[in-house]
Each structure stands twice: as C-alpha cells, then as structure tokens.
Image (cartoon, rainbow, N blue to C red; front, top):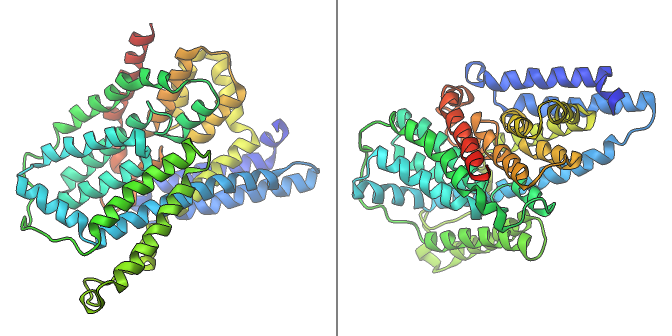
Length: 429
C-alpha cells in the first residue's frame, strides 16, 4: 500500500481529487454542477489504480471497489426514497399547507429559525441526520418566501442541528453506528454526548439568530387544502423511517431496505390514489404518479455522493488516509488527533475517516472514543460538503445556498465546534 501511495497513480489521484474539490468550491462562479467533477475524478482515480496494479501485478482494487459500491448503493437508495417522499409531500401540497398554517400563526423569521432548528436536533437522533436535515430544510424553504437572508442561516442552522443531534445517538449517523457496532461505546454511554451536542448547535445558532431579519414571511396566508391522500403519505413517511430504524436495530438489515420497503408501500398508495373514487380522483388535482416523483429527485446530489464516496474510497485504498491518521495519533496524541479528525471530516467524508480510526484501533479509553465520535459527527458542519446532510440541503436551493455562502459562516460554526469540545472536557475531566 505504501508503494501505491508513492506511485504515479497515487500522485495523479491526489492531484485530481484536489482539482475536483476546487471546482466544487467555485461551483457558484463556474456554474458547474458539483456532481460533474467528482463523478469524473472518482472514476479516473480507480482507473489509475487499476492500471498501476496491472503494470506491477497484484492488488485487489476490483474487490475493494465492489465493497465501496455497496456503501454507495445503500446511501443512494436511502436518499432516493427520502427525496421521493419529499417530492410526493410537495405535490400533495403538504408544505404549502404547513407554510400557510405557520403564516396564520404569525411566526416571524426568528421564530421559524428556532422551530426548524429545534425540531431537527430532536428528530435526527431517531430519523438520522440526513433525513432530518432534508425534511426540515424543505419546510424552512417553504416558509421562507424566497428570502435569502433567512434561507442561508436557516439552512446552516438545520445542518448543524442535524449533525449535532445525530452525534449522541447510535442511529443518528453512520459514524456513530460504526462506533456502536464495534463495541467502543455502549448505547447508554452515548447519552454522555447530549450536552456537548446541544452546545455544538446552540452556540452558532445563537450567533446566526442575530442576523435573521426581524420580519414576518410575506405571502398568502389563506388556508391551503392538502390534496387527497396527503395525510396518509405523511403517516407512511414516518412509518418508513421507523421501518428503516427497526430493520437495522432488530433485524440487522441495512437501513435502506426499510426505506425501500416504505417506497413499495408508497407505490401502492399511489395506485390507490389514482384509482380510488373513479371520476372524483380522475381530475388533474387527484392524479398521483409515483414515477414522476422519482423523476423530480435531485440527481445532482445523488451523483455527487457517488463521486465523493468513490474518490475518498480510492484515497483510503491508496493509503493516504491511513498515513494521515498514523501521523496524527503518533505525533499529536489522542485528544488533539481526535480533534483533527473532526476538522478533517469537513473536507473528507467522515465515514472512511472513522473507518480508518477503527481499523487502526489506537489505545484509547471511553472518553477519547466519545470525543472522536463527537468531532467526526459534528466536524462535517464546518463546510457544506462535509456531511451528507449538508450536501443534501445544497440540492434544495442550490441557487441560494452554496458552498461559498456556507464558507462565509465558517468562524461561527467553528465556535460551536470548539465549545462542544470544551464541554466534553469539562464533563469527562
């Protein structure tokens, strides 16, 4: 592996990854969809590796890539179902109805900021950070009235809340799930991170709140009637999330299987809505086509995930991630190394980072495993592409919420990240 890291294939792969990352950063200026550079480089990196191994003999790139494809497939189908449900709810006017209800209640932007963030923080430990962020960002966008000054800080607040809320639950994030299944932290012991996670969200939220306009969303607040079947789809959505959690916790099946089961029920619900009541639902308003909901899925986001996981998987296979982790724990010590892992997770996906840490299995006590769980889970909030939640939210209003817009608030997010580490130190010290 060391020879591959020092080979032309390793150097080309690393250079290509950096170039693709820069193109993602300047997406707003170049008007180049973020999925295009990462999909290309993700494939080219594995091509470089395969050519090198063919020249030198040996290696198992093909087998490793098949394993990575499994991870990509799980995330792809999970996201596909979540986005399909959101599109179905939008088409049934659920979010329009919710927006009208909130406007009738007289909530201003500042109240909506805390409502969406608070619900996200409480929902993500159960429904996972990705689904929670995607759902609540859609709600925030629906009530925003297109106000840029609200959308950007509200989206950042939701991403932070989703990642922070998911850090204190075994089911809140894939990294916490990995730590839990490896036996490093028991289920009850995750509760130790509740207060640091809350601080991680509350500190930047309090700062972002100061920049929320003191206005009330404009628009028609008249009651909006949801289309037939809307309430049943809402119930199906929550049952789908519960099924995904149950499949993993009790049946030891991948969560995406539970999501796909929910999609199957939604497809039959669509068939029922299309044919129930004869002429009453034969109108344009009553028609429901599940495949049109799938067509409206944000495939730029899904393909971005494919490219990122493929590219980072190549870096891991080459050995760069292992070299970085060995240098961290060998030179910095456990505490600073675990903090550095969190910072790195803003750039490199936290899943392979945590995987590398678990594979190295450094000599650490419970306090340090809790720290790396906290930092790896919340460090992704530092950048918009640092977490699955951030990438998914970027797909909702990519014309307003971009990598560059999130980057401007980096110091604010970093305050919460630092405060949560201090909180961990006070609790464990």
